[in-house]
Structure formats: C-alpha cells, structure tokens
Image (cartoon, rainbow, N blue to C red; front, side, top):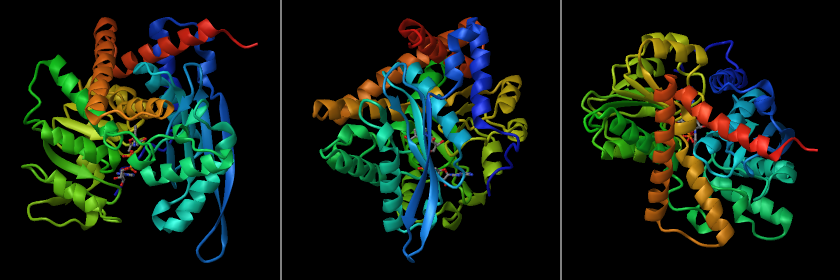
Length: 423
Ligand code: NAD
C-alpha cells in the first residue's frame, strides 16, 4: 500500500542539493561550508543476536555523526528494513541543520539498524538493542552523542540503551539518551513533543496567514508517535482530521475521524489500520491519502513519499512535514510552481529534539521540570524559529525550505569559522 517512490532517490544527495542552493543564496564560498558536506564520523557495526530458535543472526547497524561544531551530536535511532548508510547520513545531516535552526547547543547524528522489528520477539529486540548499544558505546555519551527514539523505536528501547551504557560505564548515565520513560529520568511531554511541534508550527503559520485554523481539514500519512500526537493536538484546535494512514492502509471520513478511538486502537500492540472497521470510515491507500482534497497534508511516516508524481496530483493547500525528508527536491519544485506552501521538516518536526534537549538538561541537573514549563518553553522556541524562517522567506523570496536551510547553514558555518579548522 506504499506509494511509488522515486527510484533514483538518494536522501544524502537531496540534503546536499538543498545545502548548495541555500549556500548560493547566502553567497557563501565553498570553503565556508565544505566540511558540512561530509559526516564527521561514520561507524558501521555487525550485531550478532541469538534468536529464539537458537540460531545466530547478524544484523547491520550504523551510527553517523554529521557535525559536533555546535555541541554534542544528537539524533534518533531507527530500526527498519529500509535502513542503509545513505539514509542514516542524510538523517544525521538534517539533525545538524534542525538543531542549528532552533538554536539549541547540539550537533547532528543518527543511528539505524537494518532489521524488521515486527518479526522479532521482545527478547530478540532487547538483545539486538543491547548489542547495538555496546557496539556504538565508544562513540556515544552525554557529552559526545546522545541517541533518541525514531521510527520503530520507543521509550522502552531507550531504557535498554540507557541501562546497557550505564552497565558498561559502571554508574548510572541517564543523560546518554533521551526519550526515556518518566521513571528513568524521562521528560514530561517528550512522547508527544514532535507532534506538538507540528501543531505549533501550523498555529504559527495560520497566525502569519491571518486565517482561522478551526475547521481546517487535515490528512496525515503515518499514524505513529509523530502522526497520532499531531492528529490529537490539531483536533483539539478544532481541525477536522479526515484522513490518516500507516504502512498497511489509510482511512477516510469526510466529517472527521474519531482520533482518540484510533489512537487507542493502534496503541493496542500489533493493530494495523488495514484491520480497523467503523461505520462510515472508508479504507484508502497511501497514494489516495497524499492526493486527497484537504487544507493541510502532514507526511509523518518516512522519506521519499511526496514524489514528482504525487506533487503533480496533490490537492493539499499546505504541506507540513512531520517526517524527515518526505518530499524529494524535484517534487518540491512542482509544489512551488503549484503555489502549495511546504513547511520543511527541519522546522516542523523540531519539537522532538527541543524537548530531548530539555530532558538532557534536566538529567544533567538531576532536576525535574513541570509539564507546563516544558510546553511553554517549547512553544517559545518553535515560535522564534518560525518567525525567523518566515522573515527570510519573505525577505529573500525563497521557499520556506530554502529559508530554513539558509538560517541553519549560516549559523553552523559561522560557528565553524569562529572555531577555525583544527589543527
Ligand atoms: P513511528 O515508528 O512511531 O511511526 C511511523 C508510522 O509511519 C507508522 O504508522 C508506520 O506504519 C508508518 N509508515 C511506515 N512506512 C510507511 C509507508 N511506506 N507508507 C505509509 N506509512 C508508513 O515513527 P515516528 O517516530 O512517528 O517517526 C515518523 C517520522 O517522523 C520519521 O520520518 C521520523 O524520522 C520523523 N521524526 C520523528 C521524531 C520523533 O521524536 N519520534 C522526531 C522528528 C522527526
């Protein structure tokens, strides 16, 4: 049920294309940002796991650190059969740009393990996570590189990472990973933070457009951690969520889906949207979801979903990227020609890393903030970043994506310049 993706798509080449465009607009010389075209460090590991049937299976994992110029590297860990080095490289570079855009003192990293977690037992998943953590432990740490959840990883997996690293070090190290459960020094509001950031981005956008948000129709691709939190929070703002999808199928209801009921349904382990039944709810595929007539489309699944073909067919007025890299650069140009406003990933989904930053700060202080404080501080940072992007978008007459990259690139390149090239 997935969309026909662009076959020549290489996510890392996509990052470089936009980086070069942003550098051109900023009139940066090659020297100013050449180092940012490469990851600082790339680690590939083999992860042997004793499976439940007694056999040994070896999985491949990666941890890529794109840049540590602005602070410790930061980025999630993804478990997926699609993971490869170029994907992890791109995701790491997007983290550098995202952290710079929202101006938090982190660089960018990402990790991934090539596996299908849906077919692993809990014991196999735990062994895989622990061995992966042990293999990357020489290059992670609270002051070096701090993992977090991403596709198919969650608070439970973060607990195993925290415990494994702490066992290796011989003392408790909560600040080595974020997105942990509350009992293990997690942060209130982290679970919904990326979805909340998506909602705040849309609120900020509608303020700039001078239009009311209530009553707007929304379609969301991907009903995982990001998609379902965004759906719930936008519904609270009076939006009508008329379409949602996961990897198995999509659902459509003209008068608005019952988001709370759907969240309960998917949170019950193993439930897929293809098996969901409710009167008046129609099953659709991902292509139909991405091209339906809707005010706001939120891709919140994986990369390479809004392809040239989808961009030509899409009827959305506004696209807000919950996922990382959902739109190809070729599709982006079509969206621009069609006058569809696309708010880029490095702005729209930054809520997760901002609250991860809050979690790390609390861990280092051994202190817990109230949830209201987390929400308030997140809203301030998201509004500041949005305002900056909007200003560059208007001043330079570029797309919001180029505007966001320009701010992030300028900030990172300037930091690098101040520090100089070692030795
Ligand atoms: P998740 O694993 O919780 O959910 C992913 C969802 O996407 C699931 O519903 C899955 O079925 C669906 N999906 C997967 N492949 C699909 C396909 N081919 N077609 C349609 N749906 C598909 O993951 P998540 O944490 O919600 O992450 C989603 C996206 O948001 C990713 O791009 C991730 O990098 C990005 N992101 C996540 C966070 C975070 O804090 N979790 C932060 C920033 C960005």
